[in-house]
Length: 275
Image 1 (spheres, rainbow, N blue to C red):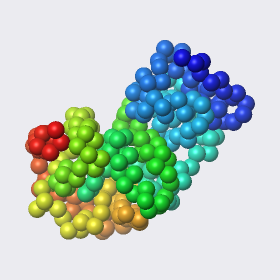
Image 2: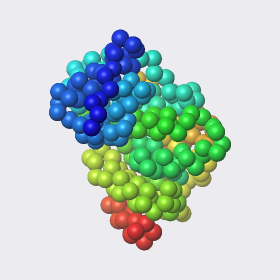
Image 3: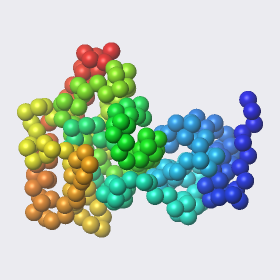
Image 4: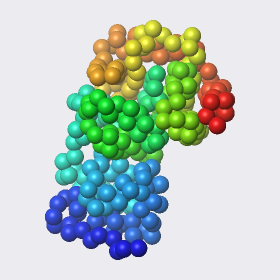
């Protein structure tokens, strides 16, 4: 096996960051694959970070800092990297709020980004590549994987996910990808602060039929609603609007299967459609 490429940490901040990650990883006695498993990214992505060739979001940097015992050094260095994902402004604002939320309530006609596996998101993003809209596939995957690090933080947010029943039957990426994705949903549902529920067809509220909805509880801003469509989104903070969508969510939660029944439903779909 060839020796790893040596970086000159004076060439860029990204190179300095990568060299520090590699030094801490080797001190811990881990391979790139082992480190990747601890922060829930691929080993190839760790390799790119160590080579200074990968932009990474704040959540991933925070996760690396924690597992490598960097005592805040990686977080401090990340602040000077100037990383801004080339995404629409509404996405960036949502990611900022998402990282600060103490509670999140999601309803979607698609498995939400925080709950997607990498193969599933690659299949999803690849399906839209023909339209050439937004960043390239690798950037989209990188940003989405980085966001998921917040679920592995020492004090993660509470997360409720209600999925329209139809989500389970769209074979995005094929049977193998879907089986892995549904297995991941089951695993998420076993976490103490994550609740996954399936909403039968007849239980959907018309007010959220046009897209996905997220209710966020923020320490400084209180409650807000984020509505997302294919190419647009909006934030709602007026009490009367927040109350309307909160009521809609409550109604759907009342009509949804319990978490235990939802898990059984997902297992049945896996066996019947994705064996």
